[in-house]
Length: 571
Image 1 (tube, rainbow, N blue to C red):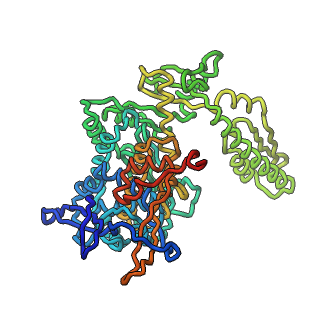
Image 2: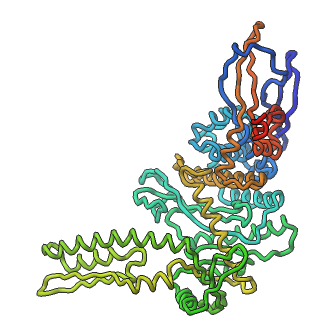
Image 3: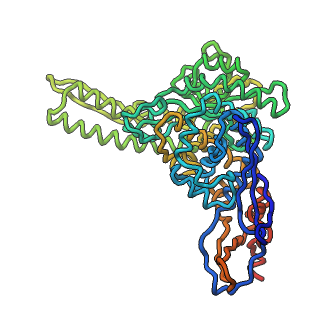
């Protein structure tokens, strides 16, 4: 987008202009929008002025700068090939508008035009009212899964090239989001499944994401039905992984890079391991503790002297390593001990044990009163100890005496301590990266936290939340999810460009504080009272953001804003 000044009727104005390609007519057309007056602020009596509102600058300006670096709108429009009318937004413009809205003020599509009106930086030179829920649904119905996947790959290529992302290790994980779609509403994406929120009364939509090791930037995602499995989703993503693999090599200027896919145990299968090998990916995965190979690894780690301290930044971590066949696959297994995980599991076991004891005592009372059958007693007693490893150390005996049921139970503290010593607080990592050091394998697996952090942001109350979503059609749900993931990527790259130690939420709060204040003045002259935009006082970090994201092109007064400092305050 180009910004310049033009004189109209004796006054100067700042104009934003953009050129948009019309794929139907095969020619570009121009759009322009007035940003505000460029004349110097008039001299007025301060007692005759009043504040009439604010305009967002910092947060949306930073995200639009990142989008401009990636040519985000162009990538999406070229992949989707859907021509927007001259008086309506293109798919790329609509996705960008929804992405920045969800990043800054997450609300429904009915609030999108009001949000754009409250921002000084422009997503498009179109009027804000052109970005409506109806326009979003119309565009969503015109794009396909294949087009959105191609757009993701093009954006990933641009992100790796422009922001120099390290994509040698990619983390993969899945989650799902609650919808409030009626049961009778037809659709394939919203299905009843294993909801992460524990809500059994809602239909959910699944999301699988592939994230870079540096910057936590989503490079590829897939929206899938809420009742789908992790293995099936990753298998469906293999073709897209192959394309992503090729474009990342191109972006990094390498012929064939060795990349590693990190994921949790929910997506383990021997066939999937072989398929990933065909696509050119090494793997690091957390095996389920019930797996035969995991049991052997835990037995090895329980031997005296097997667990050894790691060095460097992982100096507080202990691990044991061995190389054994996992089925027909040659794999290196690493047993990692985590004190934080152990403390969390102990807390979970303590809570579950209290509930189980209360349930077992309740069953004892029912047995004493003779109001329960043997079959019911066995089912409920088994269910009471079915959670959080309780069956490992809580013994329950159901017998009959003279035709009447009898219940005995006790907690075996010796077995409980044995469980804590040999299994709790430990993960079994499985990889075909045999030449990697133990520390490198552990560090790579910790990248899985990057995806989990993205999912935490996507939940209600976080940065770029997926919900609340009021879509009901599959096409709208798919495009809404695409826009939400684009928002996550823009926020991650903005934090990366700013090179700050602040959290993502802290960074966005800091940027959102950079706002222009609208002041209406009274000059005493004839005509409409002019409105002046005043720049805020900036901190040192906000001044850095102004320079990094070129926010002064939207509000030139930001360059002259003095930042707050201790020395300035003392003077």
